[in-house]
Amino acid sequence: MSRAVDVIVIGGGQAGLAAGYHLRRLGGLDFAVLDAQPAPGGAWQHTWDSLRLFSPAAYSSLPGRLMPSQQGETYPDAAHVVDYLTDYEQRYELPVHRPVRVQAVRRDGEHLRVETDSGTWRTRAVVSATGSWTRPFLPSVPGREVFQGRQLHTVEYRTPGEFAGLRVVVVGGGNSGAQVAADLAYGTDLTWVTQRPARFLADDIDGRALFDHATARRRALDEGRDDVGGVASLGDIVAVPPVREARDAGLLKAQPMFTRLTRTGVEWADGTRADADVIIWCTGFRPALAHLAPLGLRGPRGHIPTVGTEAVGEPRLHLLGYGDWTGPASATLIGVGRPAREAARSIAALLH
Image 1 (cartoon, one colour):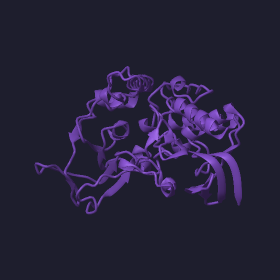
Image 2: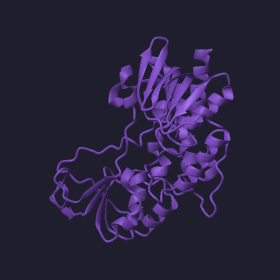
Image 3: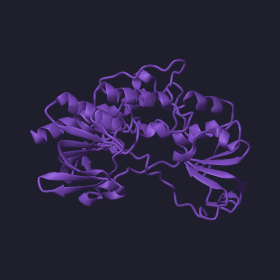
């Protein structure tokens, strides 16, 4: 099968839907959203059971449609987000094709050729919005291959009941590490390990405040004013209720990072050891950009250099939702709307 459209959006999660919304609003462009998932909801349909948003529903919304509140919950869970994204996709009649896995994007004269597992598309512009969930990062730690217990990444974690009574080491001082550690604090022999001392944000700071801070920083930098510091300057961990409760109960006490794994556990630089049955690596992700490799755009640290969302070496390509380098807070529900709008406008100006 071979088809042609003006714009291809790769990825049907929150960033891809936001791009689709703004392309639809502009009008005049034929576009398609290609999503590798078999169902709506993006990465949210694969998270652990207790995951909560960092912001109330009203401040976790995509453009054009407020997320409804979840009954009995200030901070909605992942299932609520999946329902919201499903409704959003249907409400705006976004042309999502799934499951379609994009394998490569190549230059083809005046067009870009998008090769998938179900045929080829020719297009005049591409928005890559594939996120990072499919590229979990595991640090290179000595002894990782000799540890005889179970190792898993955040992407594989679902529920604390699976680990009841076991000795569990959770590695990671970000929000995922803190939430998973809080989840496991009551029913396991937990050791929480972080690269640097755990830094909790003030209890009254949530995702809305973080987005406002990121936006203010970007505005200051654009206007040549002093850097007020990124979100990380405020702290690393949003104290959502389960994290706050475990912390206040004295169950979230972070240990420094160990230096190596042994056959039976972990060992610190001073020779101290801890036995473990399970190690859960909450160590983040890398952008899923393998499909763009034929374009030869990779820069330092695996990122593709951009100005805003536009790829420096290929103006027909926009990257959306991978982090601050593709728009302030663009990897969040509330933050992706503005860079999605800018990407859609830029594409419309290029193609018209």
